[in-house]
Length: 164
Image 1 (tube, rainbow, N blue to C red):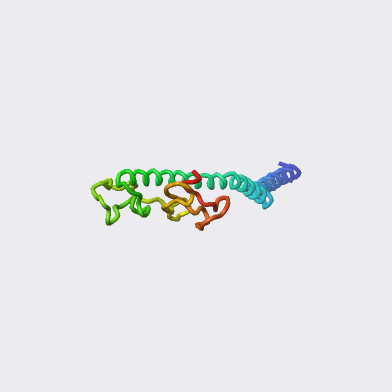
Image 2: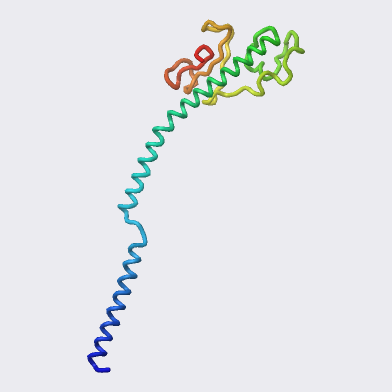
């Protein structure tokens, strides 16, 4: 091999080595995401989460109101059954789950009670009972709504058997 062929072969080897190094460095740089790409993905996820929250939260409120109405209807039915069996209205909702002391005819009280347990309203508060009714019926059963206080509007409005 001549001197010029040796130099040409050395140049070719150096060029191939440089090309391999450049490819390795380039592959290492491409191994991750850029900050801009990550920020774009985070913004898109945030927008999607906002859209989902806007559409789901009102449904949860409607579901809670629906559950409260169903519970009130169940308690109303249990109170009517208690009245038919015992010939009087209960003094409290607790009388639907356990026989109250001082019943005139304890043998008429249904074994196991009229409800297995008293439910809490969807907001974690006790249902209320009042006799006589202040709304034209024989009794009132109600929930104070989301705020847990009497009165209110929207989700905070009282839900009772007079509004079912």
